[in-house]
Every structure is written in C-alpha cells, then in structure tokens.
Image (cartoon, rainbow, N blue to C red; front, side, top):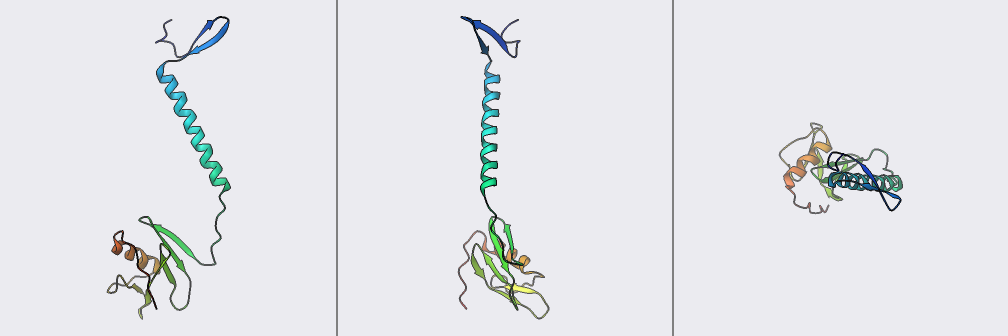
Length: 130
C-alpha cells in the first residue's frame, strides 16, 4: 500500500502511532474546522442578540440596502428611510405620494417609500422640515 493510494495511513515512530495525511486531507480538516468555528460563533451571536420590540403596528423593511420604517399615525403614516423622515401625502383617491415622486400615486406607503428609494439612487435623503 502506497501513501498516495491510502486515505489514512498509520505508522509507528518510536512506539507511538503517527497519522499521516496528504495535502487534500489536511485542507479538508482545516476547512471543516474553520467552518465549524464560524458557525458556532454565528450561532452564539444570534443567541445572545435580543430582538428590539416594535411599537404596535410599526413596519420595518429593507429595500435595496435601505431601511424603511413606517409608523402608523393619523391621517398619514410617518415613513422613515434610514431614520430620516420622508414626507408622505395622502391623496383624495386614497393613494399616497411623496416629495420625491410627486406626480405618481401609490396604493400603500410602503410602495411609495420603495419608489422613493429608487428615486434616490443611493443618495442620502435630506430631512424634511415642516
């Protein structure tokens, strides 16, 4: 039996068994060890993290890497993109429009916020002052 043909060969060097592995086996064991280490670290972080309680009716969505938060309010819900308020207006036809999409109507505030994120094209939303 040659070393190349065997997957695992045991030899005795001065009375103690020595495990001889080829490069592929060493690489497999190393990758498996790092994978297990990374997975256990990620699971530990998830177990330690506590979810933040949301107020009743609040919606959080991530769209194209931007965080959209909608808080229920009367008469118009408050919409935030990356914690900056987006001015949303209620139309008579029970639709919504925003300061960025003034000539388009949307059926929900979430769709209006997503269209605003598309309109920003990666730019930062500036605060709206009432």
